[in-house]
Length: 124
Image (cartoon, rainbow, N blue to C red; front, side):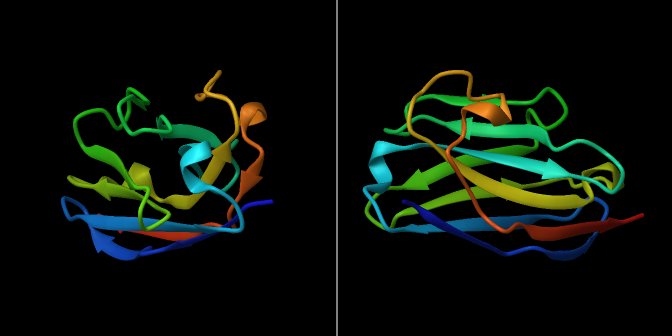
């Protein structure tokens, strides 16, 4: 079992930055690939970015490529999401998730554990 707790969300103006963190506990963090998803009101939860167990592989949705950066610190059991050049369209609840296998990391179904989410609101 893995417990995930996100933090760092908030209200920011368009063009600003936020850094989300997701702290994991309960099992060997480095055994899991990690991902970030987001869900805006009335929309499906969508893939944002993912990172392999070692951190050597990263994957991004086209909508965030070049603006968002995922990273992880296995010594601190934490994965991060640095978000720059934020746009109102980035407004959503952001969830981190852990996947036991490094397969299909852009798809929700391959993730085994989820956090409760943190709200990010970008004002225009």
